[in-house]
Length: 275
Ligand SMILES: [Fe+2]
Ligand SMILES: [Fe+2]
Ligand SMILES: [Fe+2]
Ligand SMILES: [Fe+2]
Image 1 (cartoon, helix red, strand yellow):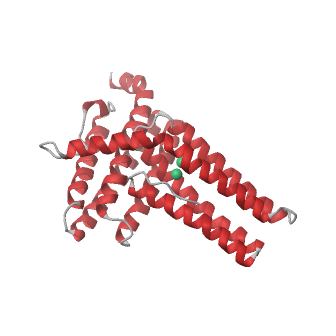
Image 2 (spheres, helix red, strand yellow):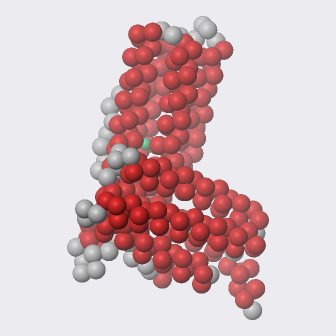
Image 3 (tube, helix red, strand yellow):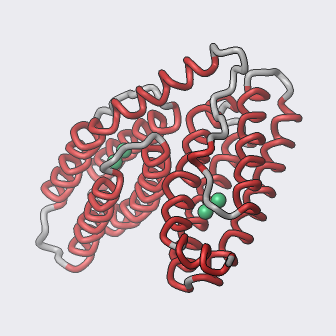
């Protein structure tokens, strides 16, 4: 299996790793023909794929790809299909392994090479915009804009501050100060965790269901942030890639796709309470 490269280091590395894992699964089976071990390897692969899909969804939502919900449903379907193949392998000894592997590979190739390419123009537009912003006098990629207002003063001030910190990480990533970058990354994480807690309680006070769904979205965002921080600290991800290819998308995903929608849904309630 071959991976396509799109210029976002996080996604490119993810696709490359998945392609290698599929090839490794093939080799493993060819050499051993051992069904239980293949099922165990397939389990580990499903975990990696789930992680890649959740990162991809955060990035493409942050890039403004309008069909992210549909793309995310495709990810769910793919995971369910692969889990189904794994289950069949476990219970049906007549199922031919080579055919199952072939189906799995072509499913993934179709998705990564064809369906994923639908979001490429949005990532390119985002990268072009970031480049243009970098060349302005302020040099800021992430800039606060009043269209990001949620209507809650505390939440809006948190968002401004988070954007400021994310922008600082963008700047620090281009410098040599590794220790300073690591420190700033953890400051950002602490601030984001605090902000999420406050936001969840504000939303849950207005509507339990919205608060709960929003909390789950935060869990996913935090998990991806922690995974990326860990990769930077392990030296597997460059600070510049963390800041430019992940954090900018993460930040915009959180505000424009999550918060603004939910706070707007609750706007009449919040306005009535303010009277
Ligand atoms: Fe992908
Ligand atoms: Fe995808
Ligand atoms: Fe949020
Ligand atoms: Fe927020």
